Image (cartoon, rainbow, N blue to C red):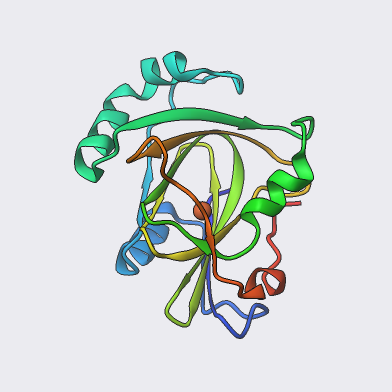
Length: 181
Ligand SMILES: [Fe+2]
């Protein structure tokens, strides 16, 4: 289920805000400068949907996002418990980092959790099918796909060589376990 919890960055055990209401999630994140949308998921896509299949269903929303957020391209990534090198892949995104460009993801299927460290707060956003999130460039964040991940997501790019992680060296992610098993 889509959800948002907002914590002080020193207090992972206590959430000041906890909601599973997508418009409320969107409003809180907008206040923090983060784009969050629900896209219409009336058409079911297989978890192994490729770029063409995704375009056929979400083409209009994809083009709107590209236009307004200056994304040049997108691809589709799928991770399952059988994905080779899973532990390393999970660990790569599990430490706090930033990018020089926005990190936008749309969940075609499955789920994953973004943790956004903005000011003194940590926004834990559990995304599921139909959720779009765009983490602004320079925002400290990490992503947990869970120990047994299962998701298919659209990734948007502003540059072909972009979206490189710059690690902050802060171990904060170790204090904020994700609810995704
Ligand atoms: Fe990232």
